[in-house]
Image (cartoon, rainbow, N blue to C red; front, side, top):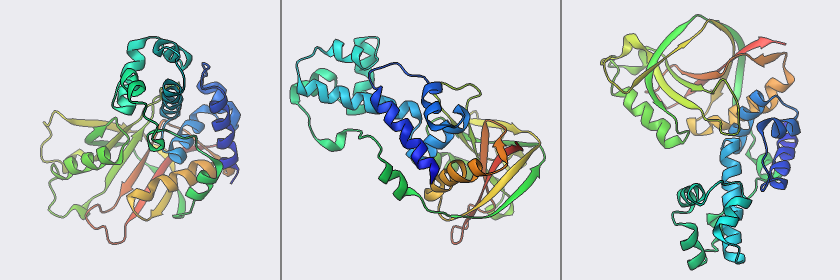
Length: 283
């Protein structure tokens, strides 16, 4: 699994530069992938965006320093890349639920609070193959509507699906396809975010005036379609294989800043087959 070794190089680079300013170009260069490909691969394998990983590692090392020596809080903030005491305090409280001052006063040392660096063995153990029936398909333009989350957590994504089920017309949900659309930004930096849209074709919606509805138009495109046989919880493992192994050895490159999952039935969970559709073009 070459991609595990390549990602490990980027982890080492990040760990060596936690107190330095680094760019996505510098990090992706360590992997040998384009920054477009690398960002998706890192997110699917590690479970966090590059920015989230770096932030959590920097906050962990800052927290350790707060309880290990007497360096002032503002100097710790500056050391780990924060421009002000206020910005550092907000980020620290989101991560540890207390302020840097309170953390130092009560001298929290419980290891489970800390974000440890990812290691190669962990990445290797995560991998197993849930994919079959890989094919090249062309889809016409699709206009989809549904509920979007900018938070990639499983809980938020499931909440979007729950809202969608409450706004569909068919009594039998198996009568039509549903789509989970992952949209990445067109420009890339460390602060990459993505959105997830749980959607159907708008004809299947009961209430088109719901202010929470979002729409996306997917253009005519060629796709490689992978059939994932397993639960939605295991989808990241299939994405890991797609971006880490299959694409790097194929004659294709990703052609657009989105991909999507197609569900032929999200009512029947007994034997789910989820199609992962990646827009591509030949090299």
